Image (cartoon, rainbow, N blue to C red; front, side):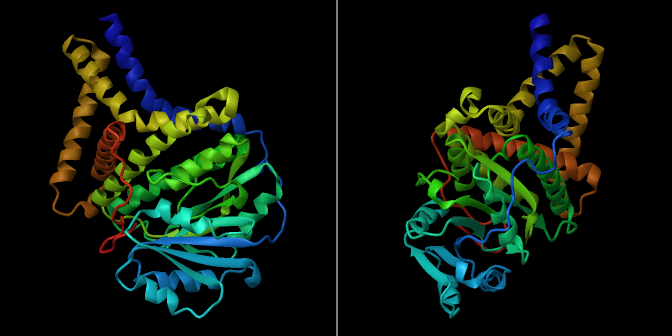
Length: 389
């Protein structure tokens, strides 16, 4: 019984550590540090922006117009659209722009976003490369804000802040936005301590010379930053470099997106496993284990903790009777949300536990597929009525 008690407490402590303890430790470690722990400078290096897309005819023209209007020297900005076998008129929409800065690269066979980026990177000579998605609209000064951080020679990549424009449009969007703002706060503290863990496919930039060709199964905005960290560089977060996009807008699409991210990311971490060695990456190892690895494993710890709690509850341990009752309540609310005919209108007291359980459940599927060697290379967009990479 003592061993069961210890295992149950440990299993329940890990999720609490990941969601509450880790941010608290980051706050304690960074509260006396300056807001910016690296050097910035108002330089204007040559920049290439890669826009990855598959069947984005609905948004690509708006994205290109937004990019061409950015407050950055025209002669120093190159725009490359990588179309992964689009067949909805995306390519024609790109060709309609008669601007020498806009270049279309078509990849046949729908090989996935990562292979498209590999193809584009072969042609880039600019000092800095910015990665973006077709639905991410940039603030006018976003490129300038990103590149100012490369004045510090120790900085290898810079992550901007992707903000949601539909954060109040339904229960799914509200929960997704709440979670994302929590993530942005963690990114800011990680950046001050050492490096933000991973990039953001909507808005992040690297020193072009640090790029390494990726494998098809790699998720580019996670593996690429890890490779840069392994080379001895930092990755920083700049909250002033902003872009705007919509949430998935639906619980099912958001959960499926999380499954794909976990599926590809856990494989990527195994491929660049040296970053979890403190002897190699210092405090960044603590960050990536706490922020990513343990978070992906939370569903497994919760299952173990739940099983132990119910056994201890039936054994008469009062504390675990309360814990088991709380778990049953969460599951009941999750079932209520699942059976709802309009999940997007769920009240917060139902939507939040439903979102938490569903996302973690799909994360387990992503982990299992990764361990089986099944990696999702291409997928449909999380946005409704469109497909992507």
